[in-house]
Length: 457
Image 1: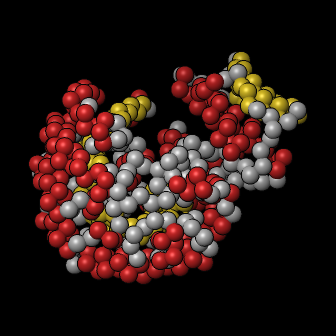
Image 2 (image 1 turned 90 degrees about the vertical axis):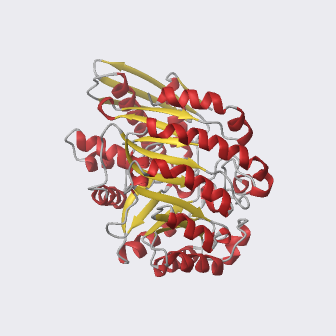
């Protein structure tokens, strides 16, 4: 049972409680604020605790930010002592750690002091510092900067861990002509809505699930937009190795694409079968070797926590990814949301092996010349860890930095695409989401065009 007299804190405090394997039977919370002092009182399984914290409040946004921080920290301390557990990110939940670090820096403060107060481990404090250093020269808070995202929510099959609104492409291909026409209409508006274009990112789903003609149609639509900033970063998240062809790779090159993602997720054929990936490790190597001749900067995705993998299995995957020479390697931790088959079948959240996998990935990648350049955390993330993008020097992805730090507008087109307007001077972010499923998106395209034009006006 959980109760609070502060409704905007309900989900925040429940997120803290969910960090722990053991959880109290009852939590009662009450909050009051007087003369600059935040009062938080908890009764956990019948035992009372009180906390008083002072904070400088300049507006409603800062008031809520400080109250979230103090209340979450109070409950975290209670439960950490009660169950004898410490979390790698302490009381930080529902936030991008690097964003908080930048906020502290902008106020002239050392972010490490706040992170220590919130219970963050020294290792993770160093990780955040390394990410901020790697983002130097890319990170830019400037109104009018824009990234363009194109959603192609089609996949060969649906993976067991996936919660996206996708279905095998053979079941959705009938929608393709109408979907591409909707994309054409959205992208025809783009030149009027884009400010300083920093990057184009075509994501999925699995964009390479489209055939050569369909993929060429999308790239042709993007050509006039690329002409606005011909030297901007241009990424296609090609995706799963089983849908790679020489023709698709050549097509990307001819349209100016300079980055691709090849996503094996693991270098274990047993795991690939278990999670519903219809490709093999050998197919990944064939796809990678075919891509090398075109000079793309390549990202390889891995996921810690799949199947019955051990820390040793995952470490081996990281070593093999490094051996390919890929410029970027992203180490994800499994996050299971509603709609993921594995969440329905498995108690994955209480998996103690994940932290060992994360530790191994950090040691292997940093020892191989990679540096962490972006990171984010998700709810329901196994082991309360994080996702980290690693890069070789000078090969960081601008789009990933912008989208994770939320410093630039994001014009997102297609089904399940979320556009953002960022007002850096006001510390404000506005969002506009398109429908998730294909039928609703296609049927509502006229309204989407009107809303998007107004949103970016």
